[in-house]
Length: 101
Image (cartoon, rainbow, N blue to C red; front, side, top):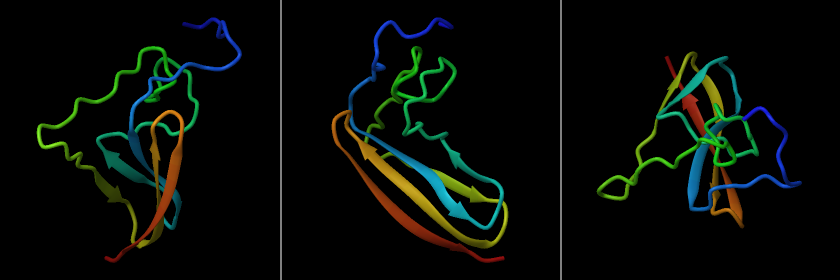
């Protein structure tokens, strides 16, 4: 697992993924539950990434609807970044969230 990749490009488990991340925000800690898939090529085995050697996609819920909760540590304005990726194409969407006390 610690050896360099045997090919120039990294492998990825293909499939449709959607991942939420923080693009900008006033607070220092924003957490997602469940933890979101890394939308960048993170090949570490311990990373939550489709490029990681030991990664498995999450099971599909019975109703096909994935739920994600987000917690903000401080009031303020946050911009969340969603990336949908099928292994070939991707699309980004930004959502502004205002958290009040």
